[in-house]
Length: 265
Image 1 (cartoon, rainbow, N blue to C red):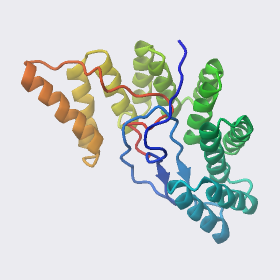
Image 2: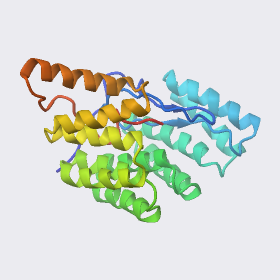
Image 3: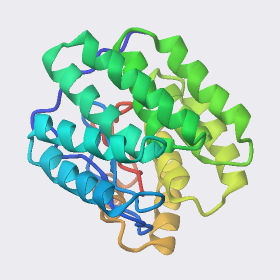
Image 4: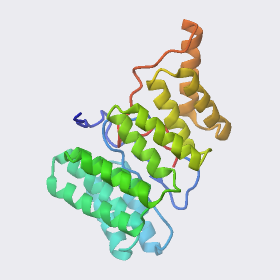
């Protein structure tokens, strides 16, 4: 099955920003067809100059000024070349520019920087996600699967690679494999919001709406601020009241590498 990503109507308005030392989950928007690139602004290991460059670069990226963002992130990287987030931010910017302009050189630079970020931090979720999306974008689907499977093998006690691999399998229509991986993720971390939300989504796709509702309600018990989940609960309950039974929603379809309705970082 061949997947071709299409850019969203509103470019880059779904970028998830990871602020300095932020730990509070973010509520993300519904998935679009383009890989969403989280910009990391990390205080760890950065001097004040690098921090400021990252912050200004983040703001420029949000405003659609990618050349200014590129310059700022390059400056931050020169000040702290071994910071994985600095490498990731620059990779994300090159990927956006390469995607928009059809520039293979930019995409190649993005790939190198994603790989550098992963080499510096083997558990960098956003870098794995971004690189997997780039590999798919450039027609190397099997490499994307291998990348995420290798990550899973390296950190068997982490739920993150299991969740990402499940997302990819779901994108390619293998909902059963996605369900198995998410079940494994929940064995590792039974309160993982992303895994619970992902499981709810897969179960909706499989027509198991009552089980999906149970997953979504569990998410809200853990974090009542998850507005996207509250909307899914309301939608399922409305379907139930109208039809006398919960039905599968065929119109709520995510795409791998795009904005993730269950992303909580």
